[in-house]
Structures are given as structure tokens and as C-alpha cells.
Length: 131
Image (cartoon, helix red, strand yellow):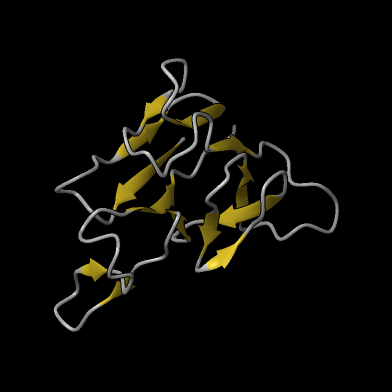
């Protein structure tokens, strides 16, 4: 139903969102395992929205839940542990730090303590055609 396009492909692969709910973290039971000490055992959950609630933006097609200590960010804004945020196609989802795009189109971050290791994705929604 969607794809998480890695903004750091040397370190992390793209993720196909095949289940209605998927988890990210260090734990073996997570659908997407990220071996990085800054990532919580259960860092984030993403859920597909099948029917947007009344009054919701029809472009918002998934809900991200922050389950982490070090943070989940949507387009650079921290969600906060235990909180959720609706997301839409082309939103950036990042863990711990939010990278920025440099002049050559690649992504980097500005925290000198982290080096090249960051976890960030662009969310892509595959349109579902209902008959």
C-alpha cells in the first residue's frame, strides 16, 4: 500500500509497506529492524488509513505513532512519545534527527556527533482503486 524511500540508502534500504500496520525498531519482532543504539526497541508504528474520519484531510493516508525515546519527526516536526500524526504522500519521516537536502540533492544532517548515520524516509502512498 506504500513505500518508505530511504534518504540514506548507503545505510538503510527502502521499505515496502505490505501490511496494514508495520513497526520499526531494534526488536526482533519489528517488521523493519534498524540496528542502531539510538533507535528504540519499538520506535515507530505506521498504520494505513482505509477510511479517513469525517473532516480529515483526504490526502492523509497513514498514521504514524511515536513509541520512541529519541523521537520520530514528520517533515522536521517532532511527534512526541505516545502521540500520533497523520501523514500524506511525500511526507518525510525521520528518526532521532531530521536531515536536510543539500545543493546536489542528497540528504545530510547538521549534528556533528552523528556522522553519516541517520534514518529518514520519504513516504509514498500507492493509490488504491476501489470498484
